[in-house]
Length: 92
Image (cartoon, rainbow, N blue to C red):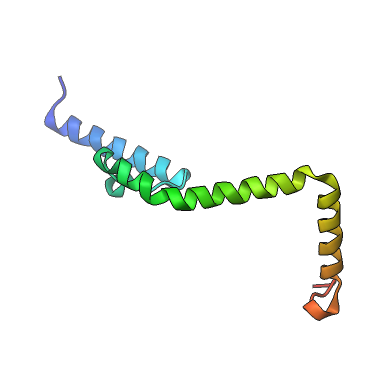
């Protein structure tokens, strides 16, 4: 059976591991994270931004699927890079 002191030490160790995990993976610390009861609200609040990001990714993926269009875009970008009107210098 665990003593009160051992239990406190184990909880502190678990908290440290959770904090390092959150930090390593870019997550919000556990103490400030939303609780399960609020998960639905959080998901609904994030839905528009997620849908926008997904839409942009799908559009870009569709553009890359067209090889000819991708080559035209790359050529245009190279021309813009060397166009003095845009103020880019090849030796920056």
